[in-house]
Length: 370
Image (cartoon, rainbow, N blue to C red; front, side):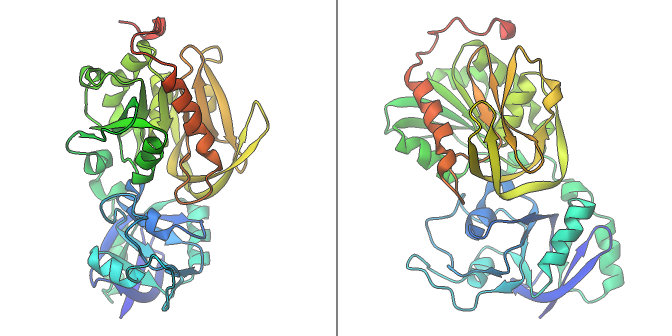
């Protein structure tokens, strides 16, 4: 069946429909990784997005029951050059087309994803829709009327846990504030002997402290950090008590905002594998990323916040550390799913901080005391 991808600026790409017959509306973004299509489709950071895969052949490994990053698909739709007709992997349970159908996802194949990616890179991320409607005039009109996220600004509310979940095994109590947590992050923490409690994004500081955490993780998640600023007082309270904090992705941006920083949106976000340089050592890490916003590096006081990592492609801020408490954050996924695992050292460092911390054992950060 014929299908069309129509961008908000009126640009149309014709192709072939995959997945269910229907229409998908979302923010059109591109992912440059060669692998990890299942992880990206199910990553909570992909909520509300139509994912363009730049690698030309997608679906080679099929779909399995292990690599999902949430309970199901989070992307609104996918765009690929060619769908693999003969997937092969010992873990595969079904092919990608059947998975899209089971998840109610619309997709389009047989289009020039290279040209599409260049268009998005040149003109910036924009809204768009995938449709089987052949009235192109009406389709363009509909696309041009789309608003940012089509009115879905509160994306974190859609992906955060609705109830507290505790994983009782593990020695070191860690609370994860769920802004869109990936399953792989929870696995990585539990593998490091952390007793993880997952709480919703709207959870207050008192409730978090009732779990007596020796560390707090601000998870990754979708959307604009300015839409979840209710979390900022909670972060400041935790910093005040000198409890180690690790921010990841959206959590990194929120920690930065709690420390006085500001954010801005990239013209086209970082999705895929990106080299990141540690400023102090000069070491370069290959990292897995999925985000649109970054911290503005000139918005901090140098005597309070240290910029620790930078992206080698555009020099954007990839990591910060709060000098008074030692709490820190990274823009990328340290657990490396999908992608390289060399950035796991940033998880290891946090766990070492957790092991050395006792609730109330520090004097706290005077800057944030009431």
